[in-house]
Length: 231
Image (cartoon, rainbow, N blue to C red; front, side, top):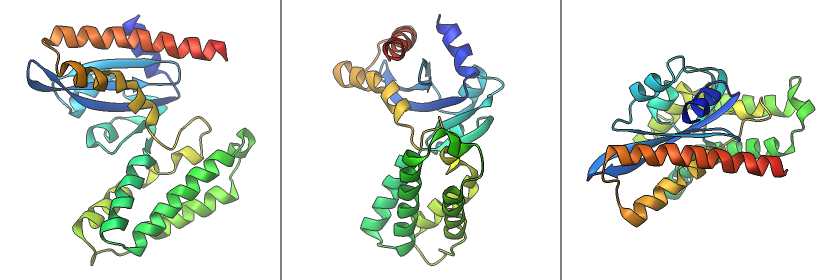
């Protein structure tokens, strides 16, 4: 069943991905999740790099929108489209506003909030043809990303460079009804591992960590489907 979950993930239209640090016999390792509304696939890796994801999904996700944070290894994955977690972007922007009080940071924060609010208002039919409100937000983003911030703090310069590099992955959620604006689903998918780390601090062996990943994948997938069936 574990392999079947992986294969079904690979063919899903929307996939969320995330990772969290774990310890195995006092050594650093990583627990990755690849999840959908119906599935959760967890896997353990000693590396946080792109190679692990590529070995697991050799063709990437050519039919999927892949929702992640800004980890370079995640953004490097071949996918139909990417969606960056806007919750992560908003946290960074809030920090810039608190520390630097730049007007640009406030405008970008407002843009993302407006986009998320618009998402909540869109109906299925609104995705079938170009939407004027979506286009207005898209144009606002383009203008903000063209702003010259060379005189601002390096952290803000790095942030806008990252956004420009991944500009096609910022507002994908406004064009696809089932694509969320954040990666909260993936963060929930690895929450059990975080709880286990707080309680037991580590896995004693790699075998034990892998067993945990397999069991939680099957259990979480079963739970997700039972909730869907109840609806």
